[in-house]
Length: 184
Image 1 (cartoon, rainbow, N blue to C red):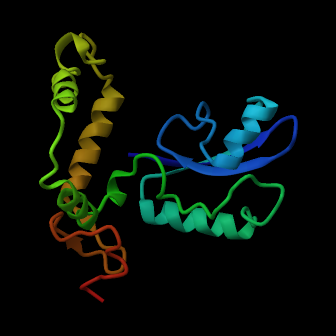
Image 2: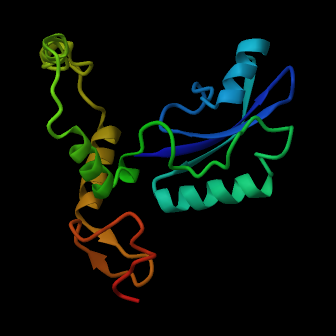
Image 3: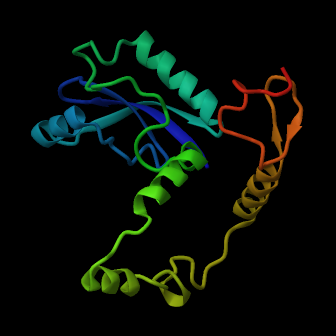
């Protein structure tokens, strides 16, 4: 999955915003509180100044933090950011959802009792994306997309440690493997 970092600027006021998305970065406007309030007040006349694409979350995060600090996006009145962008928070970042986080969430939900109304709603969503309800129903991926899917699937099977170029099995690979490299 590609993660995009983007620099947006309001055309009328000149206010800047630096953010992260996995959506189309040219269409996505951003979701920061100060930024969205600014857009609500002054309109959505926004230009995309720059976009950076990353398939490695470590590189994305390092770049985001460096950019945030270099441009002083939190302290400067030229920027709408309330905190440093780290390239990981907000939205959907599957690799950032660690095993520890999943276990913690599972523990929190264990033993939870749902009302009959809630259970009914949950049941009504079951199977919504199957058959004709699936957005890809009756369609096929093009050759480039199929090749991209195959490449990503292959790369999920093997991970390479950036410290020592050793291959790590997926079960032993963690997001911050470079910091915890067993091969050091």
